[in-house]
Image (cartoon, rainbow, N blue to C red; front, top):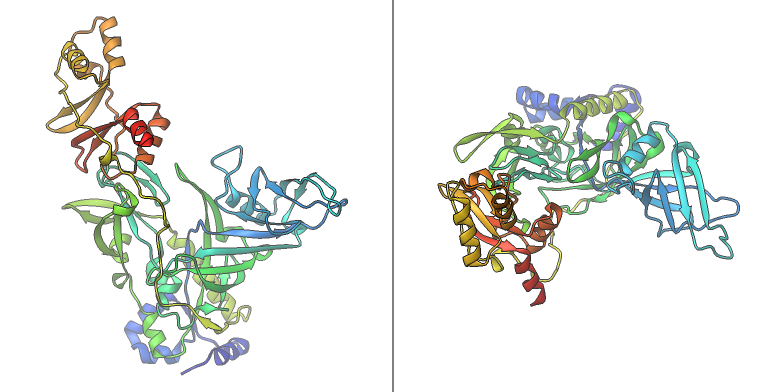
Amino acid sequence: MKTVGEINQRIKEGNVCVVTASEMKELVSELGAEKAAKEVDVVTTGTFGAMCSSGVFMNFGHSDPPIRMQRVWLNDVEAYTGIAAVDAYLGVTQLSEKSGEYGGAHVIEELVSGKEVSLKAISKGTDCYPRKEIISEVALDDLNQAVMLNPRNAYQRYNAATNSSNQILQTYMGTLLPHFGNVTFAGCGEISPLNNDPEYRTIGVGTRIFLCGAKGYVIGEGTQHCPPYGTLMVRGNLKEMKPEFMKAAVFPGYGVTMYVGIGIPIPVLNTEIAKATAIRDEEIWTKIIDFGVPRRQRPTIKKVNYAELKSGKVEINGEEVRVSSLSSLYIAGKIMKELEKQIKSGEFFLTAPVERLSGECVFRPMRQEEVKFVKSVMAQAITIEPETLIEEASRIMIEKSINHLPVVKEGRLVGIITSWDVAKAVAMKKAGGVAEIMTRKVITTMPDEPVEVAARKMEKHNISALPVVDAKNRIVGMVTSEDLSRLLAR
């Protein structure tokens, strides 16, 4: 048995034994947990991944005459000001009002890199805060305080993602190709902090951590904390952080996020903790979730461990599917080594938690009105084949009073024609099969997709109907803008 105080004394005296989480696996394998616990004092861990639930509290100081900032923008990115006169919270995912590929994460990264950013604030004005507008430039050194406070970071593990639909999906898990074209995952597995202390014996409220190059602290469990998918709420001084351990990023079609580097030292107080830090990727399991299905019905495609994910390929439905990581093992490794260096040099001392994190999971969905799904409004689909003559397609549309005809081949959707396509073909005296005039890249929906999502697809692509398909791209119905209008009327 050891104590955190005894380990800190060894740090002070310069004779502490520190190893990275990667090295600890080998030591326990070679020496056994009991002997490794005697020899090793601290195991350093690391993770570097996209952590959307992050941001910074800032105090700008008072102007003369003073202003009570009701709205404030930094490089055209709005920060939340409902706190005090010149305090604001800038979230990393907040978007610029001028660009969808620039946001709060970029502002924070620029400040840490030593750049100035533009400041604009407005107010209605009061007797004690008469100023109504201010425009200025600010650098990190100009701020009285700049405190990174992240509500949810350092996921213990994370569900992997794939896509069974016939469309490319752009998500917070990156771009997912259709028909199970790829799998993406997040988290650093066996070197990630919470995986090396899964019962939260040493990581809790008050634990000192490495946060983006600065010394930070765990201030509680993170939002959506649900062991073994645990999370941390953390804080640190932005003025002490280094740009190499944070990086603004844009996920196409989703938005802005920030890669946050976190390292946590695990004090090896006993044999049980030594055993925990010997965990391997093969022992850390998660699920591959199908994002091609609406959220409430998303099925688990299969369970996998992090060793399989890190191998770069998994098997789905008998086929090999490539896997890519959204986290950086390379930067996580640098964080472990940097933290090891700081502890050995006496720059970083450990703290014992004053309160343990909860080991229970309470994770409720939002209470909301009943969701309507496409299957509740879709109509039977009338289909044709690529060889169907344009004249015949026109006759079907007139007889059935419809404006859209899905084109199928061997039961699967290959295209669609509209009454407008037919009218153009007739005007140009085309008389062949509909394959000549059909749209081949078809926007579709699925029976279990919420009608709101289907409506947004129609609006985005300026279309008035969607073929409804199953996971194998077989037509099961049609939904039109008229169908959605009737639903709203009901």
